[in-house]
Length: 161
Image (tube, rainbow, N blue to C red; front, side):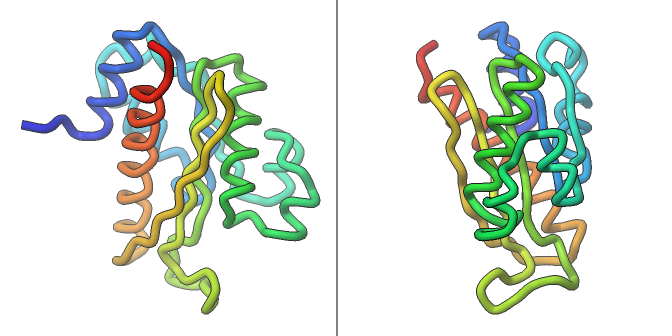
């Protein structure tokens, strides 16, 4: 039986004695809360930030204003910069971010509701992953959490052990 994303991420972080920090927008802290539901989470989680507003992404995480003004906060570039920023300010081995549109409002033809970007930053740099989820606001957020933790596992597995 395959492990759920939270257990898989926790097990891999613990096995590698690695630490993670989170920068969350649409998920509002749910990624961190999900990983924290594992007993012993204090061994792997450094810190977490909910940077919902564009200005907080800039001020706290160091997302470039140019990124916000040109490609927007719901973008691969912003997700990478958020993940890089949280990794840098926390000193964690891994930084994970999520930004997107959970709905039900706010979508456009180019960026519909359910569009989510996950960023994962490690020693080799930051990557971003794009997802398009369906469902109501809670369902989109839940899918984003699982996608973020799955992306972390995949990046960790691809990194030097």
